[in-house]
Image (tube, rainbow, N blue to C red; front, side, top):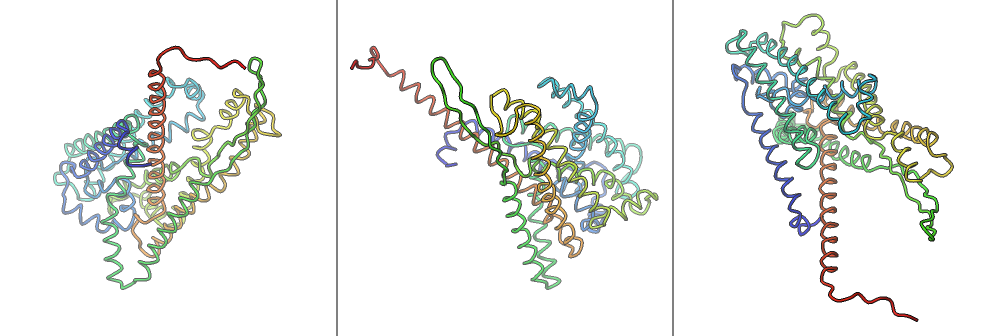
Length: 441
């Protein structure tokens, strides 16, 4: 990457400007409040709830839920719908066939995901509206407030989903991940100021230094693990083209230690927040089920940590084998290209070997994700460290940054190749006169 190469890449600059423009629109939307909310009561409520689950919700919505903005539901209904559609795509036979139809099947599954997003957003928005009334946060409680709240929140979520798809298609990077990333980054300065003020009040300089060192160590560990690869040797046989015999080559098939990236942590966090979003706002009017959820699934509770760990491990394996790295597809591609793994027969045996390798690599990958996400959770519950310095937020920030930088580099590399091809064509056009053949001996 260089400034000169970046200055010549016009299309890349347009994509970056387009992405930044849509992300600014998203940030502006977090400050537009839902009609009928009592702002003073909402601020008082979140001053008490920010240390618990409210801070978790606030992080994933970019501060929109603490201000009760039109994007208060965030992008989580879309992520939850994506989880359901992908699970059904692995178990429901008609949807399995859709996945094999290529682009048309993918479009149909995306449409089902949008329908699921609308359903989940309606359910969550209605529950949130009722909970706001029960918590005394509505200025004029009643059916009109509930309907206005539901329409506003569902519309905000669908608009966010559209923003994410536009960024992915016409911008740079994954749109959904970038929306979550920008929400976390935007709230980091306030969280840092709050944490430093807390350390100044308690006169605990050692805790502040310890947390900073922990964040730096976590970032270093995440970068190291995301760059780690398991290289599988691939051999290509000798082949004859016409009267010439070409020697066989060799290469490596890189398999990342964590092929799923940050997706398992986001999915697990989304499922963890789904049943507890409503109970956070219900105050003292919760039923026995919601009271039990609040007591046992709060941050730092054993059931919370156990559920979070199991979901991270499950989604690491599921997303890798269903989306990120499919052994049957890789084995089929190698067979079509006449490549093979030394000592392994092409076809079914190669697929079984790749699955054997990937399953064992994911033991390390899922363990790394669970460690990064859980260790700061435990420290936060013990020392009241803000959630923004937790493992999930650091993991999202580092992974999305690395992914976006890699995409920018790939665009720059493609632009440089296009420039070289154009130069070679121009040089070819400048030739005049008949081309001289080789001199006879």
